[in-house]
Length: 94
Image (cartoon, rainbow, N blue to C red; front, side, top):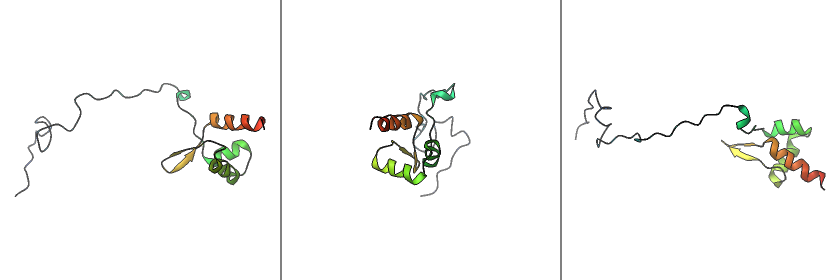
């Protein structure tokens, strides 16, 4: 069984192999972000520690204990100013 020859017009012919295109017939429209306020500002543990004027290991402990909310993206943990505000409110009530 030899290798299949690909014609120069393979895209117009519907792609490779079975003759079916691998691209969807309807592509979703891209999401447009017009202002930076539309995205949450993500802060690393070190950035959050600097903001809170605490050692980063203390902030890591807050994350591990679930007292300060962090989300994991790409193997790294991030928090937002909103999560920090929630944490500070709970500390003010204690």
